[in-house]
Image (spheres, helix red, strand yellow):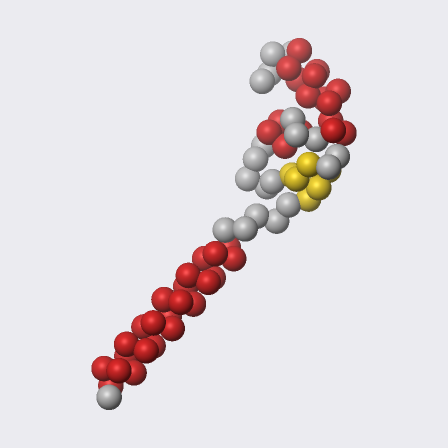
Length: 66
């Protein structure tokens, strides 16, 4: 009886860990200029995809910073 309870508890624990880790992997994003801004990317990686930042991206590229 104790073994069955332990196995059931183990299955529930594994399922819970899988569920929690899948939610933790989703990044919270903000949309700017129609493009998603990701916290894991730097400002240049995010700005390149944004329509609102074309002048900034062009200036950074012209300066040779990218």
